[in-house]
Length: 242
Length: 230
Image (cartoon, rainbow over all chains, first blue to last red; front, side, top):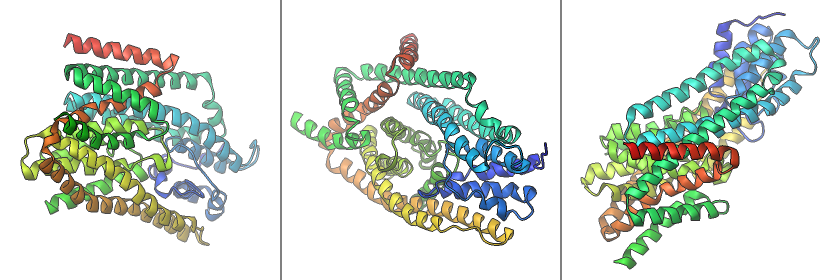
């Protein structure tokens, strides 16, 4: 097994992957960003790297936090060549991108981001700035570390990266992350309910009414539109009450 | 004030780079943007009130895609900065009323910003579709760097210009609302006090199933217990 890429090559790939969303477009999605990341290491894998890059111009789309795993795997497959591979590198990319996108969406978009934002809101409500900064630093530490680890892990495993993310351990991790996000969401609800109660009967009643309205109507009307529409309505009610 | 607006527009461009083209560090979320704008304008309390109010409303768009998604960077920066600039220039003591006007402007700016960035994004995308790998490896590397760099720069410029145009308008509107409509201060105050309801509905919809509901219920009990104890 050859390992032609050094740690510094993988670090360059990691840095370029931080900006994979910069070239997002509907036809190829992240394909230009992927090529930019592969370009950082392609010279070491293939002297006339254009041939390697030309194999990866097709459509590519995954969760940006899962992209390092896929790119690491692509680099390993390109390093070892097609001999003995179960399928083409293109097939790997397609399979890994969709499998890992689901994991990335659940873990980062569905759990870690809501967890960080709800904890940030609780800290901000109580003017607890160290808490706000701690949330920001911890979230970024997790995201950056997992992306850096993703490139190395993907490069170490190659095809095996898909299997590594389909076991019970990963499902357990996703369950824990979702549970933590739900717990933090509950904490925010508790804080908001306590504050509404402290605001008096009118604030509590209006909050409960608006929450019910948003819960029922948000499938048809986006919540931010409802919020903006309620602003002139609140004036009208205040004028009538006057 | 012009210098403040220019600096805030530049910051908005950098935050958009992080949120739309970078690794999404969350600095572009209103609750964190408030830290930067509040520090810059020395109106930290009002900035945090506006930032939290906008964040609680926009928690609901976590899973929204495409046209339903407002531009939270432009909306957040405009909403928070217009609140702070009105307080800075007028010295108005009715902070929650000014916050309500600023948050309303932020919500409108978020929707307008989404339209602007979508239209500008279509031109950027058309240009990106034209990418081809040149014949020589050196040219390929150079072209890729140019495409990524220019595309990221376009994100910065479009969002910064959007804030540069919208912020003076929003500040004027917030100033006008608070100056002319003082009679409805109670209504605006009640509106901003009820905005957490959007977060309550969002969390109920997101974690209202049997498994996640248990964890959420535990969180509610923990928070109510802590509030009662403290």
